[in-house]
Length: 403
Image 1: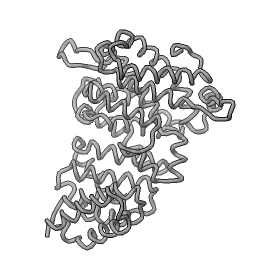
Image 2: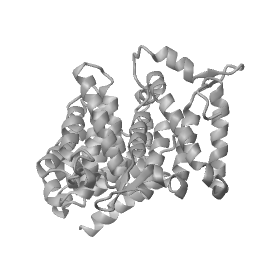
Image 3: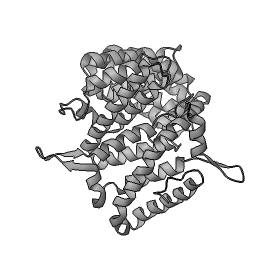
Image 4: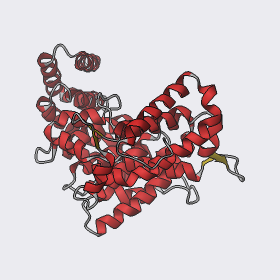
C-alpha cells in the first residue's frame, strides 16, 4: 500500500501500515533491518509525491491549487469526520527517525569524503533536508490558532510544547538526525536552506506574499541543528552557504518585514541562536533591536515574545561586554511585558529576566526594586505554578547573593 500513488481513502490504510512499521522498528528491529532500504525508498517516494499538494492545501494562502490539493489530501468518512495526511506524515517521519541510525540505511545518509575521510551528506540526505524544511512551514491553521491565542504560539515554539503537529514531528526527526549525523545534517540543511532561500528571494521579487514562510522555515530548521552555526561560519568549499549569505538572503529581509510578524520574530531568534558566530557589529545590532522590541507596545506580540527568547540567548551566549550596554533596557523591557503575560507564557520572560540580571551585578543592583516587584508580582499572581515559582526562587537567590 505504501508504494501506491492512491490517496484520499487510501491514506487511512497507509497510516495504519506506517504505525505498524514504527512498532516493528521499535520492538523487533532485527527483523525489519533487511527490508529497511525498500521501506525508506517507499516512504521517500510518498513524501515527494505529497509535498506540493500539502503545501497548496495547508500552507500557501490563496493558492490556485488549494481546492484540488485539499480534496486530494482530506478524506471525509461516512460519519462526517475529516481525516488529513497529518498522522500519515508524522508516522513516516517517526519511522525515519527510528531507522536512520541502523546499518542497512546508513548508506542513504552519509558517505566518506575521498580526500579527508570526513562523513558528508549524500544527495538523498540533502533532498530529504529540503523536503523537511518544506513540510515544516507554518500552516494556515497554525496562524489562525496563534491569532486567537498567543499562548499557543508560545507553546508551539517551546521544544517541550504540548501540541503535536507536522512541524513538531519534523523537529523531532531533525533532532534525532542531529544526534546521529551531526555535521552531515548541518551540511545537508545548509544546502537545502540555500535552495529554499533562492525560492524565497524569487517570490519576494515577484511580490508573492508566501515568501516569508519559505525563509522562516529554513531559519527554523537551521536553528535546530547543533553545529549549523559552526558549519555556516566555516569555509566548506561551496558545500554549505556562508553565514553572511544566510544573513543577506533570509535574516535581514525577515527582520525588516513588519507585515510578517512571525517571520520577523524568527529573524530575532535565529540571530540569537547563532550569536557567538555572528560578526560583532551584527550581534550588537540584534541585541539592540531585541531590547527595543520587547518594550515596544506597538509591535505585534509575536515579535515581542520572540525578542524575549532572543534576550535569553544573547545573555547566555554573548560576552558581557556586548550585552552590558543594553542590560538596563533588557530588564526594564521585560519588567513591562511580564505583567501582561498569562501563566502559560510568563515563564519565557521571567527566565529571560533571570539571565539578564546575571550580566552585570552593579546594574542589577541599581534595578533591584524593579526586579523584585516583577518577580514577587508573578509569584503572588500564580502561586501554584511550580515552574514560575522555581524561577522566582532562582531570581531571589541571585539578588540575595548580589546584596
